[in-house]
Image 1 (cartoon, rainbow, N blue to C red):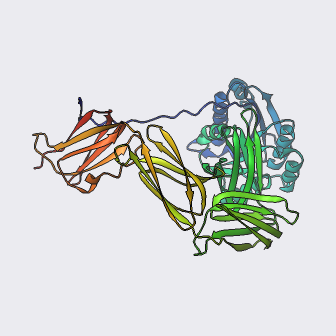
Image 2 (image 1 turned 60 degrees about the vertical axis):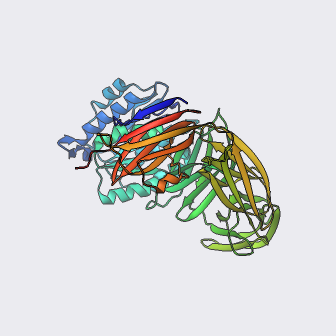
Length: 538
């Protein structure tokens, strides 16, 4: 057997820089800039209007060549409130043209904010896709118009647009008014005390606009602008979890997904959303409609939770909700009567006359008369040595009912039925093991993986070569602790053990001093020797 020897001599810190992929930018973007007298305010010794102009030019300079952008200004004419003007028509980004158009603009007038937004939405109504409108302002409207002017324009022209209102160094009162205004148009408000952040903030928002799934959140409370969005694939595995405001865009693999939005304790669902590679799907959640909530809990005869599938139907027997793989469901629904179909393993139960009331929660227990069993999945190599692996349990429909990312022994309680255990080792080798779970029984699934092994010998010493006693931990190349080795609780100066072929990190602890060896490569039939040197005790 040949030996590979690893010495701990150097510490290396690696910083990974992730560069976002380029997004196709083909929708119209309109930037509306407040040029009123309030923009004369100085921030860090420079007038806000000059800073905003420079930041806007920088933003346009960074846009992709296939973008379509236009620039509108308002508040730049004395004694007029209807002076909103498209000074750079929609076209390919040209920072020089934007700089030249903004250069002569002064700020002698009042903020006709509402009129400018109305004109902007009318211009964007000509876009066939998902236009974006950025409104950069130093405060609220100063021309006596009412906010319903903007709301009416939004309903008539701008409902397709993503609207972002950015307040530059605004007062608390103006900030509250701008939040309310953003809510009226299904948009989002962002406050920016320093205009020098404008370029980077616009670029960040623009980058988030493009993908094959767009989720809109309409009617949010201005005081609570964000909700939690979760996306599940067709195996009920969560693929996304994110905080969103009025809109967020995702790039998903083609397939069918379920989307859950949680907002102020209420859950909204959109089921069976089909995503393709050559188009964009839009999903809209309306939050300010009168709704009630149904909370269904699935329990066995011992009042323990059971995972199962749920179908909810309205009075016309139309399916209004489908879910699987959970023991507790909370769904927002219009007031009325509903029925539910609950499937757990081989058993299907029906429940009728479930009444939902507006602005209230209906708690419903779905009892299933079964006694679940318990399965234990044990993963070893062919010599009986425990092997850590990913374990996924699926029912007959392919729904994931249990999973553990890194274990050699996985236990789970399941209702009676047919299941499959999918076991994947760290080197990507996967095995499937079908099994049947009888009611109230215990089942053991023995998984024997043909995993090539190597051995590791670790010495702890000081610079003089004297033995040092300590404890050892081992991690795989993804940083997961390999936790089934007996030596974790034993203090020693020399350790020997077998590991599956792969890359590892070995960490030793002696009297509170920790030393780590990275990139320890274990080869089949080889012994890898690792020397870990600790400082000499004084």
